[in-house]
Length: 437
Image 1 (cartoon, rainbow, N blue to C red):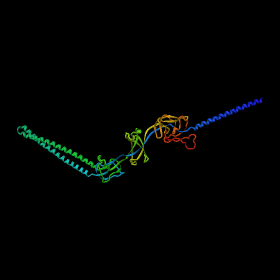
Image 2 (cartoon, rainbow, N blue to C red):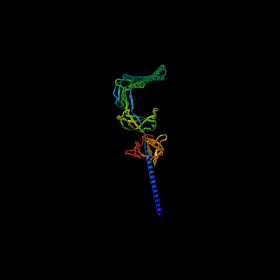
Image 3 (spheres, helix red, strand yellow):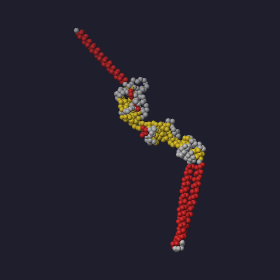
């Protein structure tokens, strides 16, 4: 009986031990399965390239192409018609203001100058003659007036001594001589007026004669020569629109760079505003300022012509060269910026923010300054938050992601950490595609 009780107790103890061992094993196995499931869940989260919202200076700019032009570029015509007696310049020659470029031979104009000079000489003689006439008329009038005065005095002192007819004749002669003075003075004045007229004619022909010397109106370079010695040149007046020029002169020591600025950016143009010019042919970079703009839009291109002046004393730049000019438009010294590929554009732009639990959250944003590879965000994100860069269509709001940070240097983005599960020693592929969604 005692043996049976001991056997029963032993069986119970062994059963309890087996049950305990089985329960413990089951719990351990369940925990390992749970841990394995969690690890699998984490490893299954898609990798996402993320950048941190930062405070940086933001500057927007526009780059437009332009063409260098001479500051002044004119065709040199002759003022008067004539044959080229001598031409002193050819293409590429440097000339200075007032330098004689060519001499015209104009025989008929020389004859007109001589005729005008002769008319002036004749007028001088006429002035001398009329001046003498005035003097003679004055003298005659003085004698007749004196004689009339004496007779009138004698007649009044001794009535009947002098006949009244004789007194009337002397009075008439006195008045006539006075009129002769006025006539002589008028002739003298007319001679002076005629001389002034002929002097003006002489100056006119002399001025035309001076135009036989064709001179440079400013310092520049002869860019083309149209005529040679002996060529007949017509006067370059508005009536002779087909008149052949003698040379073409360009002022290249100072160049104009003209650019068409789009309508959307025209409001940012300011006189004295900065501009950075890069010359395509030479590769040089020139800091310049806006000098002038038209303040009017071209109706066909919807652009506004804008100019900067570029000094070119050594003439190493030539009119016709191309250059790209960059104009700064907006600037914010402390702007919240994100990579341009972090913005999903549309009617309401948004970003995908990765929260502390690595969940992707959709956040609408208000955009500001746009740079070449960044956007200023006015609202919708905070400094320090992480935003997904590129491939936003691969993620859903609320989805768990495996963030892979990238540097935001505003010129290129490179990954700084390996995504989970990646192998190999090189940098992992960030998945940034460059285009915006």
